[in-house]
Structure formats: structure tokens, C-alpha cells
Length: 443
Image (cartoon, rainbow, N blue to C red; front, side):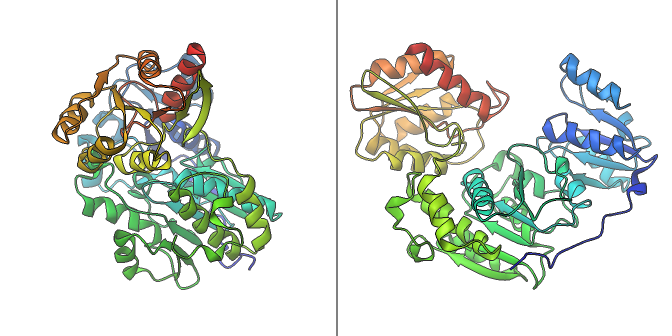
């Protein structure tokens, strides 16, 4: 298949000329949206909750003629606006956005803005865990199959920065936050990897979280495809509403790839699922089975996901900073079953239960170092599970030093926080880099 059945003409670029657009949040996607809209002749106002921003960022916004509001999103920012672009980190229930909804002002995400300018097929990956690995794998498989590809979205760089004029496909990692405000966004191939409790501090219930994830296929038709996890009960229930052609994958049926699962380079049962999902997408794009198998033999995994860092005096250090929810941390722990483990956990709480994780820690982990805002909640849950080898640290450096002192030769130190990073770090990448630097400092 050439993937060409979803070709759309570019929207009239004059649509944004002289329009007033407010962008809420100055993360990567917000800045990219500001640049795109300014280039189209829009009058851009950037609204940021922080009271200060880097001088280089302020200068960049001034160069493109954008106005800046700092220190909170006020009603003034929407007084004369025609459109709002909301960054993933901005909650939709803040008062100014509720007021905007009441006034009928359109509110869209950066991926919806990007979609308006694409003419090539999109492969969009969502799910609770494994998105980055699967998205990266698909990109590598397509490139190995001599396809021209951009990999973007919630990974690498924003979707709105992609120019698809010389591409065959766009592969995008898509979060529930980004899906909340889509309107017409529609992938040719959608993938739902799994659903586990996550982001409940924002979505408030599992039902709402599932509904946001399901938006990935809400605009799909019979000309599109949805690849789904047959082993996940939440996912199998979700797909009953799908209009696209459905293609399942299951770790109990690994024969869709032409190599034994043990030859997949990245470890863990979850990565078998990620490999199967990526393979199905690659096959739909015309990539051969042997090409897919070769990528799986050599792909080492992504940074911050069960990433080997170093060995010090026989103790192996692993960075799983992307383990931002309990299920993800459970998977990381299971990857090292049978080895003595000191586990670093904690960060900003996501409002999900820690019961299953605490039971697994009791069964398999030697000691836990707790960091961040959620440390008390974690300690309470661990003690209720009968686990009491609990230590606290006020920084990543301290956590790594204490972990090393507790670990013996041939044991591992694993950072897998089961939490968001925003209490101590800008994002999980910064947290992972801080862990790796602390390990190197120790060495």
C-alpha cells in the first residue's frame, strides 16, 4: 500500500491573515504554534502562567511580532481573539477557558492546527505506556523500508513544525492532553497500545481518560486503519465504536514478526507488544517483514525508558524516568525480576492507586528511595503493603548516593518514578538527565 488514500488539499493560508490568535502556554508546542501563525499573518498573543520566561524566548516572540502576557491567563487575553491554541499542559477547566467556551471562541490543540496543513498520511500512536518507543520504532522501520518520514508530536519536535511536502508519512506520538481539543484531526493509521490509570488528576475519572484516548479514531472512516491491543480489556471495549478497519496484535501471537521474541534487542514483555504494534503499522505502509525484523534486532530502545546508564563497583544503574505512572514502573520492575533492586520513586502525584505497585515492591524490591511531592503518599501505601525499607532524599544526587550505598554487587539501582516530574524538573527528560549526571558524578 502507498498510504495515499487520505490526501487533502492545503487549507487556504489566507484564513489566518489578520486573525487574532491567543496561545495558552509557552512550551515547545506553544512556541511552534506562535511561529507558524505569525508566518501566516496572524496577530499572535502568547499567554503564559509563569511570571518570567527566558530572555531568548521573549526576544524570539518579539521578533515575530507576538504580544506576551505573563503571570497568569487573564480574561484580557481573550477579549478580541478569534481562536485559541491551547498547549497540552494547560487544563481546559481554568476560568478564562471556560469563559472562552461560553463566548463560542474555538479552542484547538497544536496537533489540530498542524493537521490543517498536512497532505500526507498520518500514523498516530496513543496509549498509556509505550508511545515513544512504538512511535520511534515505526519511524525506524519506515526509514529502513526507504520511506520518507518525519517523527514528531509528543516526541522530538511539535507536529506543526513538520513540512510534509517531501514526505511519504508523518508518524506522531499523541497524548490524551493533545486529543482533548482536536476537531478534524484524523490519522490514516491510528494505534492504541494500552490503557492504564493515568492523568486522573486532570481527567478526574478512568471513563473520561478513556474517552479522551478514544478521540484518536473519532474522525476515522472505512478507508482508515486502527491497530489495537487485543490483550487489553479497556482497549477491546473502546474499539466497538470504531469505523476504521481494525487490526489486532497480541503478545500471545508473536508470529506476525519473523524473529523469535527473545531476539528483540529491547528487553521486557511490554516491548514485545510495542514491536508487534509497530510491525503492523510498517506492513500497512509496504515495509517487508525482513526489514522489520532487522530493525527489531538492532534497535536499542529510547532514552529514559529502561535505559542502561553505567556500572559502578558491580552495581548497574538504569534510567526509567519515562516511567511516569504505576503501571509503567511495574513493567520496569518485572524486567529485572530475580535481581536485587534499589528503586527510586516519587514526584508529582497523578491521582492513581499505588496498591498494586506497592505489593510488587514488597515482593521484589530490596529498598526504596522516595523523592518529590508524592513521597508521603508512597510511603503510606508501601507501609500498608508491609514494606518498610524506605528512605527519603531531597535531591536526585542524594537519591543516587543513598541507592548506591544500599545496593550490593550484581544488584541494580533503578529510577522509575511512577509520577510526573513537574515538582522538581521541567519534564521527564530533565529528570532522567539529572539521574544520569548523578550516576556519572558518583562514578
